[in-house]
Amino acid sequence: MLPSVSLAKLVWLLKFFPGGKKFYMMIIAAICWGIWCLRNKVTFDKYVARTPVEVVFTACSFMLYWIGLLKEDDKMKFHARVKRLAHAAAALPDRSYSRGRLLLGDRDGIQIG
Image (cartoon, helix red, strand yellow):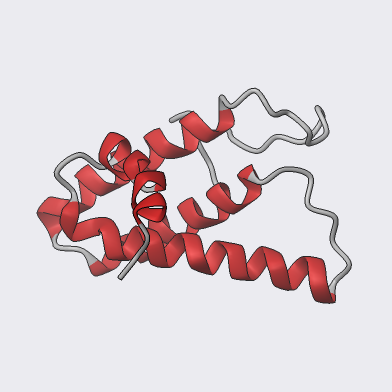
Protein backbone atom coordinates (compact mmCIF):
# COMPACT_ATOMS: atom_id res chain seq x y z
CA MET A 1 0.00 0.00 0.00
CA LEU A 2 1.30 3.45 -0.95
CA PRO A 3 1.41 6.16 1.70
CA SER A 4 -1.21 8.88 1.25
CA VAL A 5 1.53 11.46 0.73
CA SER A 6 2.69 9.60 -2.38
CA LEU A 7 -0.82 9.55 -3.76
CA ALA A 8 -1.17 13.29 -3.20
CA LYS A 9 1.94 13.86 -5.31
CA LEU A 10 0.36 12.04 -8.24
CA VAL A 11 -2.50 14.55 -8.54
CA TRP A 12 -0.78 16.04 -11.59
CA LEU A 13 -1.76 12.87 -13.47
CA LEU A 14 -5.39 13.94 -13.21
CA LYS A 15 -4.55 17.40 -14.52
CA PHE A 16 -2.59 16.34 -17.59
CA PHE A 17 -4.32 13.02 -18.26
CA PRO A 18 -7.94 13.49 -17.14
CA GLY A 19 -9.93 10.30 -17.47
CA GLY A 20 -6.76 8.59 -18.62
CA LYS A 21 -6.67 5.93 -15.96
CA LYS A 22 -5.70 3.35 -18.58
CA PHE A 23 -2.54 5.39 -19.32
CA TYR A 24 -1.32 5.78 -15.74
CA MET A 25 0.83 2.64 -15.65
CA MET A 26 2.63 3.70 -18.84
CA ILE A 27 3.16 7.22 -17.50
CA ILE A 28 4.55 6.06 -14.17
CA ALA A 29 6.78 3.51 -15.93
CA ALA A 30 8.13 6.25 -18.22
CA ILE A 31 8.87 8.53 -15.27
CA CYS A 32 10.62 5.75 -13.36
CA TRP A 33 12.63 4.85 -16.46
CA GLY A 34 13.52 8.54 -16.97
CA ILE A 35 14.75 8.79 -13.38
CA TRP A 36 16.75 5.59 -13.80
CA CYS A 37 18.36 6.77 -17.05
CA LEU A 38 19.32 10.16 -15.59
CA ARG A 39 20.65 8.44 -12.48
CA ASN A 40 22.83 6.19 -14.66
CA LYS A 41 24.18 9.18 -16.61
CA VAL A 42 25.03 11.01 -13.39
CA THR A 43 26.56 7.92 -11.75
CA PHE A 44 28.51 6.36 -14.59
CA ASP A 45 29.10 9.17 -17.10
CA LYS A 46 29.74 11.90 -14.50
CA TYR A 47 26.95 13.91 -16.12
CA VAL A 48 25.84 17.01 -14.22
CA ALA A 49 22.06 17.28 -14.31
CA ARG A 50 21.10 20.92 -14.77
CA THR A 51 17.46 20.65 -13.80
CA PRO A 52 15.00 18.01 -12.58
CA VAL A 53 12.87 18.84 -15.61
CA GLU A 54 15.28 16.66 -17.61
CA VAL A 55 13.50 13.66 -16.11
CA VAL A 56 10.15 14.96 -17.39
CA PHE A 57 11.50 15.43 -20.92
CA THR A 58 13.06 11.97 -20.89
CA ALA A 59 9.78 10.48 -19.65
CA CYS A 60 7.87 12.33 -22.39
CA SER A 61 10.30 10.92 -24.96
CA PHE A 62 9.62 7.40 -23.74
CA MET A 63 5.87 7.99 -23.73
CA LEU A 64 5.95 9.27 -27.32
CA TYR A 65 8.08 6.28 -28.33
CA TRP A 66 5.72 3.84 -26.63
CA ILE A 67 2.64 5.45 -28.18
CA GLY A 68 2.69 2.72 -30.82
CA LEU A 69 1.56 0.27 -28.16
CA LEU A 70 -1.79 2.03 -27.80
CA LYS A 71 -5.00 1.47 -29.74
CA GLU A 72 -5.53 3.80 -32.67
CA ASP A 73 -8.27 5.84 -30.99
CA ASP A 74 -6.07 6.43 -27.91
CA LYS A 75 -2.93 7.49 -29.78
CA MET A 76 -4.03 11.02 -30.68
CA LYS A 77 -5.43 11.72 -27.22
CA PHE A 78 -2.31 10.45 -25.48
CA HIS A 79 0.02 12.31 -27.85
CA ALA A 80 -1.73 15.62 -27.16
CA ARG A 81 -1.58 15.07 -23.41
CA VAL A 82 2.13 14.21 -23.46
CA LYS A 83 2.81 17.39 -25.43
CA ARG A 84 0.80 19.38 -22.90
CA LEU A 85 2.86 17.90 -20.06
CA ALA A 86 6.14 18.72 -21.82
CA HIS A 87 5.04 22.31 -22.49
CA ALA A 88 4.03 22.74 -18.85
CA ALA A 89 7.43 21.43 -17.73
CA ALA A 90 9.19 23.79 -20.14
CA ALA A 91 7.25 26.71 -18.68
CA LEU A 92 8.41 26.04 -15.12
CA PRO A 93 10.31 28.98 -13.62
CA ASP A 94 13.47 26.91 -12.92
CA ARG A 95 15.66 27.72 -15.88
CA SER A 96 18.94 26.36 -14.55
CA TYR A 97 19.91 24.89 -17.94
CA SER A 98 21.95 27.03 -20.29
CA ARG A 99 20.03 29.62 -22.29
CA GLY A 100 21.61 28.55 -25.57
CA ARG A 101 20.27 25.00 -25.42
CA LEU A 102 16.98 24.43 -27.20
CA LEU A 103 15.02 21.82 -25.30
CA LEU A 104 11.80 22.15 -27.25
CA GLY A 105 11.07 23.19 -30.74
CA ASP A 106 9.62 22.17 -34.05
CA ARG A 107 6.73 23.44 -36.11
CA ASP A 108 4.23 21.89 -33.68
CA GLY A 109 6.03 23.52 -30.79
CA ILE A 110 7.68 20.48 -29.29
CA GLN A 111 10.47 18.07 -29.98
CA ILE A 112 11.71 15.89 -27.20
CA GLY A 113 14.79 13.82 -27.32
